[in-house]
Amino acid sequence: MVKYEVKEIADKNVWESFLLAKIPKSFLQSWGWGEINRKTGEKIFRLGFFKGRKLVGTCLLIKQDAKRGPHLVVPGGPFLNWSDKALFTFFVNSLKDLAAREKVWFVRVRPELLNTPESINLFAKLGFKPAPMHLHAENTWVLDITKPEEEILRGMRKSTRYLVKKSFSEGLKVDISESKKYAGVLYNLQKETSERHGFVGFPQKLFEVEIEEFTKDDNARVFICRKGKKVLAVAIIIFYGDSAYYHLSGSTSEFPKIPFSYFLQWQIIREAKKRELKYYNFWGIAPNDSPRHRFSGVTLFKTGFGGERIDWMHAQDLPISTSYWLTYLFETARRIIRRL
Image (tube, rainbow, N blue to C red; front, side, top):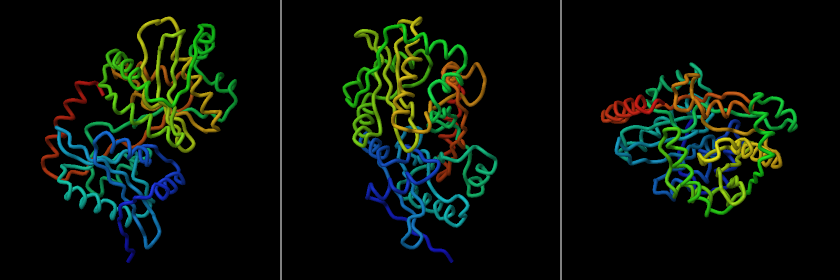
């Protein structure tokens, strides 16, 4: 009978070497993402799954003592051989053990598995339920940037291509920085953006720590779009594996006739191409084509650049306590109110 062991991994090189060798991969399971959560006050666990002496799986877990119920989160992971049923069963039993020790109500997992009936069935067999809320970007828009610039432009929606080209006549400039001093600027712009699009923004501390942590390993840059001295938009772009991720951003509602958002995106794509990356991930879009979904406007903007939709498996919950159903009811109501 195959024997597996689970151990916490404390060596960054061991962790990153394993993760970066996987396809697909996710910065949400990276060492840096763990550090960002630890430095913003969360308790984290980096579990390694071993078959003998061989590392065969990893899982970053984040404990969240939320008012709606304490729980463990696995964002963009774990990374296992999904065809190894014995390993997956061992992984789930390890989750249950950790959850019992940490006295949480449930464990929420959102792996980098395509959203197929087979994926959902894999988790359902071991007691998982579809979560009432999404976790990070489950529906994403990804552009292949290995093509020449002219070919990428040709692949855009006609109106998008026009606005990208028009933006070059507007006196715009994009600076690329490693400084966390822009966290405050981004925070203020994000407040404007969140009010326009109806979402809850992130704290400034997260921006500061994300910039500091990911730039240490050349895995992120801050992009600042200006017209003269006026900052119009700021974005944190994460570079991980073969992809650039449009992760966090904010923009002003002033100058609605200046297509500065198109200019910013094009400069990000150019920088990602300089780094010889393969993909530009625009991050989250609406899960459907409903014009009532609060992300519908953002989705229309992102999809105009060309590319393809990738739908990851919806978050799955492993109930540990009967108190989980209080969370389920609360989050279901919140999803409906927020038009998610």
